Image (cartoon, rainbow, N blue to C red):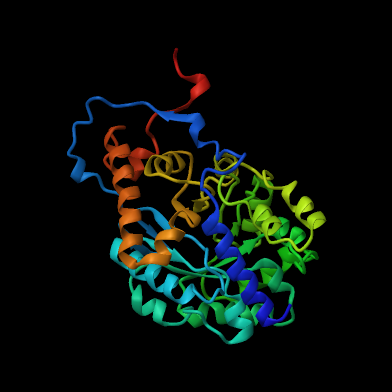
Length: 348
């Protein structure tokens, strides 16, 4: 695929995701199945609730990650600028979209050291596709992805379903795990493995950690379906039908999170995939997440301004703070012990 095709594809992705309704999915994240037990006597001040944590040895004021979304589209420079400034203002982490176009074409689309200038103190995560690691220059691309933006870690995104239904997609995934293992040895920063919305199972997560991956983003089903996105941009009706059959494919976010946490009790986990409110952030943390990420939910704000992104996440943060307050949790450690039950186990 040439550079123009890559840029065109990324612009298609932005247009389609921006046009989708967030709730327009047949798959639930599974988080609505759970409910916290309300605490009518929290015995604390709401303003005193501490949402602080650390990620890759950097302090965060809230356990949030602005997740990968923009890739190499021509609008990405402004979007990345807004996201980086907002992340710094709020004290939350930022993961950029795929750097493939920037690495292959030389058109940086805002993925430069300027991001570090806009966000000097928060964790900044680069991004490369797992399939690209199989290319002869794959490890070099990955190292450049880190160096180009001064990243604290590198996300390797796993998207076999998207590639399988995408015209010209990378459909040979033989040897990807070994390539990730080589990458871990070559890089000076931690590697994070994430899906793109179909979820990571416990066995796959265990194999990734055994290969040296430092953190897992379960990126479950319930948010953006990239099979559906590719179906929307398919070049023929038959290709569209193939892709759309997988629009509801994947492991729901809550299920992936619970199973991976059970299998890997000490591995830092990120929860993403259709998480839309601070209450759902609280549920994800209680179910085992260390950080919670959003991408599509903030994309519209990111196209507008830094202030719009800040306002979006201020709402999420305030909702999370109130969820802590109303469970009697003064901080995230206490939230992780707050009573949370599946609805079918609640007393009638």
